[in-house]
Amino acid sequence: MDWFTAPEYWLTRLVLQRALAGVYLVAFLTAALQFRALLGERGMLPVPRFVERVPFTRAPSLFHLRYSDRLFAGCAWTGCAVSAALLAGLDGLLPLGAAMCLWLVPWALYLSIVNVGQTWYGFGWESLLLETGFLAVFLGNDEVAPPVLVLFLMRWILFRVEFGAGLIKMRGDACWRKLTCLYHHHETQPMPGPLSWFFHHLPKPLHRVEAAANHFTQLVVPFLLFAPQPLATAAGCLMIVTQLWLVLSGNFAWLNWITVVLAVSALELPAGRRSVPDTPLWYESVVLAAAALLLFLSYRPVVNMLSRRQVMNRSFDPLHLVNTYGAFGSVSRIRHEVVIEGTLDDVPREDSDWREYEFRGKPGDPRHWPRQFAPYHLRLDWMMWFAALSPAYAGAWFTALVERLLENDRDTLRLLRRSPFPPDEPPRHIRARLFRYRCTTWRELRETGAHWHRTYVREYLPPTRLAGPAQRP
Image (cartoon, rainbow, N blue to C red; front, side, top):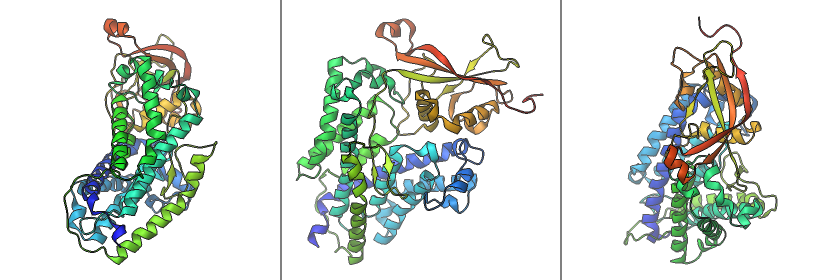
């Protein structure tokens, strides 16, 4: 079938596959380095407890068969190894069927992690990586030309990401319609980056231009993804530029980078002529079946996208094959942060020597300038931002976090930038206080060197200690 393949997209497929493998690598590395404190046997939300109450049919995962921290680590590091092999181009050296199976491995491993990840893996970009990763299985390798259907389904994912995000903004916070949301967003976003302070202090007219450009990119440009070339390439390039602007302005894990990967599917990159053998019938059949399944599953996301009660970042099937996306349907005007402190005093008082724990990415010390972490995902720091919005977001994990800090748990402390207590001397009491943070002005920055100015709001958690015997002799 001549219509089935598009040889002119050979380089497009190559770039897309290598970039996706890079995102996979970051995702698995994040899982490998953080899971013990978050999901391990002694984690804040242990996987064994989760699989006891949630059946396999609701959350398919290898860990329903058996769980141990060693097995989880093995899956995460295997995912890293396979992702690195794909990044290096191993799939191009294998027969077509074997290459497809190789691409299936990271998808299956990451699905197993996401489906037991609970709150820590409740972000939209987890499902986005799985949906993109599943579709990438059918992109093929050098034995076949890129299949048109798969490239268009990649654009279909991108359309839903961008158009869905644009709709949720227009239906949500009025400041998006008034073009004023960016007066606040760079200051109140979950994880500021090193340039966020400067973005916040851009002139307000430029913020309005930013908001208008965002609406154009999300509500108009997505339709051009399905236009003839070179319009589709222009649309993809515009989306890539927009995502790189977001990379500069904040830390959004790999959300921006997986969106860039999807935008590559619209680019017709110059690659010269390549001769490839005829496409095998079995491959055509598999691709057509997968495309039919994904289009059928798209019904509920489309209905959601068009609904006035549109929801963001939801999966409609346990395999995360087709999902709905969206971000920042509302924008906070005020930034609150939960500051955790500990003391060695047996009887905690207001004038005790309270020492503050420092997180890697979450604002804490006003003088500490934010760093660039994305595409690496600081899961605990992100959830601390949600916890500051409302204690309801903290749930059971915040109590478990306090317990681990009272124990000086090594795996938990590795998630932080710095603990104020030596390993052999854990705090006797932990407390949490809520502060309001705002970006300093240019004058305050020159005079104090501080990125933030913070003001005490209220107590978040009263002084708490471990029950039972004393922690220290």
